[in-house]
Length: 256
Image (tube, rainbow, N blue to C red; front, side):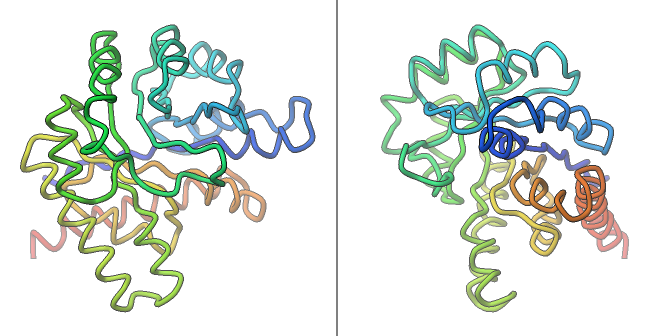
C-alpha cells in the first residue's frame, strides 16, 4: 500500500506582504485556516531572528487558534529555543539562517555542527516536540542527523528546482533529482522519517511526490505567489491534487 504524502503549507510570505505595508492585512492565521480547508495536513512558519515575516504574535495565535499541527522553523539559538519550549508546537525544524540572505540558501551542516546542535535537539525532544533538521540531500548529513538523535530530516529541494528552471528536465535536473531520490532512500534505510521542500512548484512537485520514501512536503512561497492569480484555496487544492496523482501513479506502477 502506497503511503499517504502529507502537505505542509508554509504561510511566511503572507506575513511578508502584510509587513510590507504594516497593519493586520493579509492575516497569516487566516491563511492557515484556509489552508486547512483546502487540504493541508499541517502549517509551517519560520520565526526568523530579524522577524522579517512571521512575528511572535503570529506564532502565539497559530498555536492557540489553528487545529492543524504547527511546524516551527527555527535557527539553533537560545532565543528560538526558549520560544519553542514556551509554545510547544507539534514540530520544530532547525534551519540555517543568515541575516543577509533573502531565503534559506542551503541545508544545515548537521555534520560540522554536531557539537552545537546536540543540546537543541535534546531539549526539543525532551519537551515532546518532533525535531527535524533541514539538510541537503547528502548521506553524510543524514547520518549526522541520525547520530544527533533527530527523528526527521527535511531535504532541501532548492538545487533540483533551480536546475529545472535552466534545463527543463535535462541532465542537471536529472542529477538533482537522483540526489533527492537516493537521499530519501538512505534516510529510510537508517531509520529517519524523510520530508522535503524549498522551491517546489506545480511543474516540479510531481517527480518529488513520487519518491515513495518521502512522508511530507512543505511548500509555501510558490503557493502564496500563485494565490495572486488563482486564489490560495485553488493553489493549495491543485498542489494537493498533483501530489495525490503522483502517489496514485506509484501504486499503479507497482500493480502493473
